[in-house]
Structure formats: C-alpha cells, structure tokens
Length: 163
Image 1 (cartoon, one colour):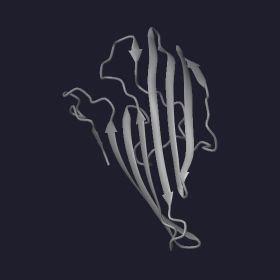
Image 2: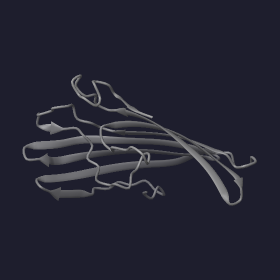
Image 3: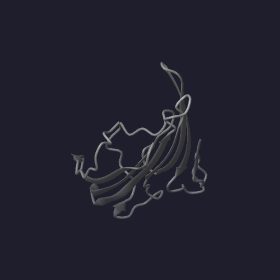
Image 4: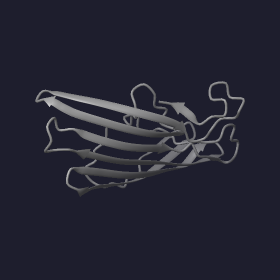
C-alpha cells in the first residue's frame, strides 16, 4: 500500500540485466463533497527495457469512495479503475509498451493480478453492523489491455480475463 496523503512526483528507477527504467508519477487527491473521497493517478515508465529496446509504458488509476457517515451501519461504496499498458503479442519492434511492475505492493485483487497489460474495474461495498465488525465485499472485472493472437491457447484472441 502507498501513502495517499499528498500529490507526488517521483522518479524511482532500477537497473539490472540491461534495464534502466524510470517512473514519473502524478497523484491528485480531492474531497469534492462531504464523505466523497477521490483519487486520480497517472504514471509513465520509460528507459531501456532490454538490449536495443526502449520502454514506453503507462498506468492510470481512478478511485471514488463514498461513506454514508450518518446512516445506521455506516455503509460505504467504492469504485476503482486501474489500467496498466500492454505490449502486442510477438512485438519485435524497438519499443516495449508493457507496464513493468516495479512495486509489488500495488495489488488489485487477491486471486489474480498480473499488474501489466490489464484493465481492472473494482466495485466495493462495506458496512459496520457492530462496533467491532466490518463486512466488506469486492467485485473485480479484468480485461487484457492488448488481446492475444487467435492462436493463443489460453486467451484465443479475446480481451476478457475474468471476474
């Protein structure tokens, strides 16, 4: 998890086996109305991905959460959209567009999260029936950013990755 308390602009990088990757990130956080929190984050990765190839990838996260503060059981609803760019299958060009997951703490679902070449919609809800108990439910819809060739055994040319 990462601190969402203030807008950021960062440039972390890694260098291994011919890789020299830089990330620039911009996060905006706002509370436009009472009990509604929102977040918009955009990140761009660039640099040398492999010998002779450059990296040109991007990611986007948009979040809205509403808490019904003055209602019995304190219900809350949330909506989140995550996008991580992907590269076309068998791309042998000079540029790789697949997001490279450098920070493994950014998890979007416990069962499945490739953290690259993916578009994720999350709908969540929670309530607090007693002081010591919180009930929470999350629904995830996953779609690949780039579909595979029709000959792909696991994806068969589709973008749908599951729920």
